[in-house]
Length: 250
Length: 357
Ligand SMILES: Cc1ncc(C[n+]2csc(CCOP(=O)(O)OP(=O)(O)O)c2C)c(N)n1
Ligand code: SF4
Image 1 (cartoon, each protein chain N blue to C red):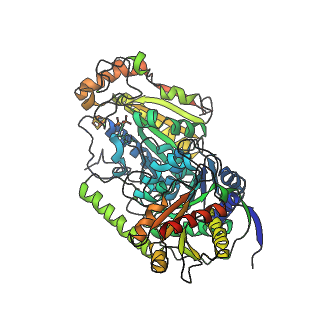
Image 2 (image 1 turned 30 degrees about the vertical axis):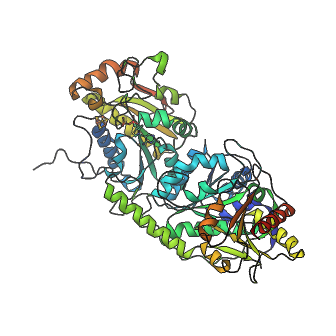
Image 3 (image 1 turned 135 degrees about the vertical axis):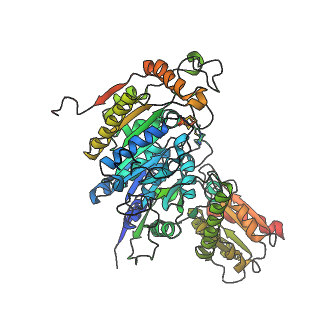
C-alpha cells in the first residue's frame, strides 16, 4: 500500500491539547514539516511561549525550551549566540509577543538575531480564557472588552509585522493565514523560506500567522475561519512585509 | 607563582569569569557595576566568546537561561534595581535547575535608591526574591582577591548542583582597586551536562526540554521535593565562613559580611586596646547561612552577638535564628550608602555590652 500522508518527523507522536478546530495544530505541522524537509531536526532548538502553545515543547521533535511569558526571543538569543550553527526558533502568541514581550521581540529583530519567530496572531488571549490581546480588533468583544474594544480607552491593535519590517535587522517578515488550503500552502512556503534564510545567516525572520480561536471567539471552527477572513485579513493584510532577498536573481 | 596585578573589583569579576570558562556574558549598564560589562565587551570577542548588551535586565537573564540551558557557562551582572528585574528569570532558572552565575553589586534602595554601597538586598538574595520555593547559593566576598576566587568557585558550585549562584558584593567592592592573583586551579570534577542540555539532538534519541512547568500537582510537588533535597545537600557541603579573633573567650561577637567585615576588624582592634575582647563571624556563604559558626562561640561569648550591616537590619534575622535565644542579638547598621567608621562600630559595641551588664 502506498503511503500518501503521514506524520512529519518534526513532530512527536503524541496527542496535543488544543481545542477541536484550533489552527495551532496546523501551524505546528507546517513548522515540523519544514524542519524535516530542511533536514535540521537534529540541530534545531525551539522555544515555546506562555500561552495556549505552552506545551509545544512536548510536541516538536527537536530540543525545546519553555520560556517565561514574552521572553522567548531573549532565550532564543542566548541559545543561538552559544551555538551559532544551530537552528533556533520561537513560537509565540500575540499576547506573549506583542504585549508583555514587545521589548524582547523588537530588540531581537533589530539586532538581526539569526533566529526565526513563528508569531501566532489570534486576536485574543487564548490560554487565560479570552481577554483582550494587543491585536484584538476595534469593536471586538472579549472577556475584558465586554462592550467591544473601544480604541479611545484601550488603544489600537498593533500590526507587528509592519512594525518590525521597519527595522534594519529584520531580513524577512511575512504575514500569512491558515484559513484555507491555498493560504496554508502559502504559509508553508513562507515558513520554509524563513528557516532557509536563517540557515544562510540572513538575520531575523518572522512569519506572522493569522490563526483562529473558536473557543474564545465563541464561534464554530467554520464560523471562526470566516470571521478571520472577514475581519482579520482586512486589518492585517497578508503578504511579504520585508524581504532583503527581494530582487535577487532566483 | 602567578603575578599579582592591581585590578578594580568590577574588572576582576570579568576576568575571573573568563578564567572560569564563562562562554557568554549578557549585561545591561547600571552603576556601580557597569565596568563588568565594559570589561567583558573588550575581552570576550577577542577570545571568541560572547558578549551581548541586552535591552534590559529581563532580557539579559533570559539570555542566560537560553545559554545555560544549552549547556554553556553563562553569567550576568547588575546592581540592585536591575537585580529586581531579573527575579522572574532567576525563578525560572532555579525551577529549570540551570547552572549560571549572577553578580549583584549592591547599591542603596528601595526604588531607585542611590548609587553608593549597601547590603540591603540580603533578603532578596537569600530568602527568595522571585516566586516559588527556591534557593540561590549566595557568596559574599570581602576583598577583590576573594571576589576573584569566589566568582570562579561560583561557576563550579552552579554546575555541581545545577543551581544558580549569586555573587553579592557591595558597591565599594566593585569600585576598589586591590592586588589580585589568578591562582592556578585544578579543574573541578563536575557532572556532565549531556544528560539534560538542549543544544540540538545531534543524533540523540530523546529530545531534551528545559522547563519549569509541571501542571500536575503531584509532579510539581515532586520537583520541589527534589530541589529541597539538593538544597539540603548544599547546606551540608557548601557552608563557608571566617572566624576572626574567636580563639579565646570573647566578650562579644560581631557578625558581618563583605567590606563592612573589614571595618569590623578595625573596630575589633580598637576595642582590644581598651581591653574589650571581640570576635567576628564573617559569613562567606549568605545562603546557606553559616549557623555552625555560631556553635563555635555560643558558649564563649559573654554578651552575645551584634550583626553589623549596611542595611536597616536584614541578616540580623538569621543571626537571631542561629543564636536561637541562647544569647542576646543586637544590630548596628548604616544605610543609604552611609558607611560606619571603626569608631562608630566600637561605640555601638560598648553601648550594647554596657546594656547587657
Ligand atoms: C508573567 C505572566 N503574566 C501573565 C501570565 C498569564 N498568561 C498565561 S497565557 C497568557 C496570554 C497568552 O495569550 P497569547 O500570547 O495571545 O497566546 P494564546 O493563548 O492566544 O495562544 C497570559 C496573560 C503568565 N503566565 N505570566
Ligand atoms: S483556547 Fe483558542 S487558541 Fe487556545 S487551543 Fe483553544 S482554540 Fe486554540
